[in-house]
Length: 362
Ligand code: 8OZ
Image (cartoon, rainbow, N blue to C red; front, side):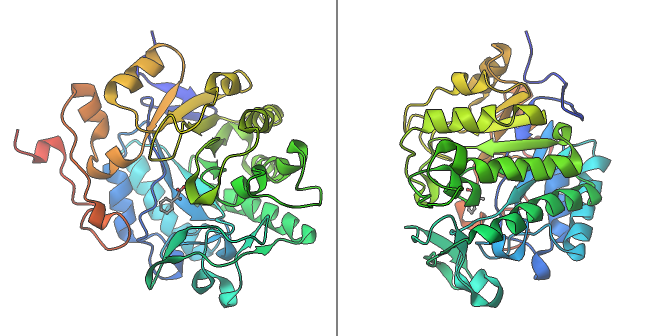
């Protein structure tokens, strides 16, 4: 039986174990949305994960929706990420970057020239974002013109190339949690009347084009995708037929030979049973490695890998407080609680100062 602690290979990437650090937004980028030197320490501390997926990183300035999130579109950002990937690789780890465009989950104060954020729709989300003035309601978006969409797709392709230049082992495209790609996928948001709206074939067009652009740059064997079929995060609502939508979304990507599909089961960071969804049906449509996420305990993670239901298990919040989570899982050692006051923004406190087992009194 396969074990959570066994090495494996996903696409071109060799992993020491099947434990993945999920992408976690921490809002600590420096000026110019450049990852800070502290980020190199933070990720290096967690390099015993089989794979690290970086915090979501905007592919272009318009893709930013929260204060101090890093980008992967400028030379300075590439250089900043190079410090991170070198530090992780020096500790024997593997790291991919999560490529992100927030779409309408943004605020004019974070947009170039104070412009409206862009989306599939002009309807505003009922939600908040984090700006220099704290938590504020998101701004009203502008529906993308059809002739602007190729530019968005191209930004993902360039970002993927930048990621390889920055030393990443690959990328994960963020298709989850009610951000831009999800804003096109779901009919609870997408109200377009052009060929990017309406039918499932049309609503999955942006995802298809993005995945083609990314894999054309760096290859399918270094590319993964994160989906969250039923999460209501960021006012995403529920698609009228999430099963048919996501079955099709995954089926159409088969020719790309993606390395992994990362599926958030249920409500991201919340209830696993928020809505019915047949994840096994999705899995039959995918040939790469299957990565599951959302509230996994040690036992659940060991079971899901041993049973062959998944190849990889991603842990998010447990990795914040436990840089040595892999060892704690292996030894069945207790987990540190995380400090919710230091999740978003700030410096080393609550970021690089969580103790390992060795540094902790027994
Ligand atoms: C928490 C805060 C801000 C952004 C996601 C990138 O939900 C995020 C995110 C999470 O995918």
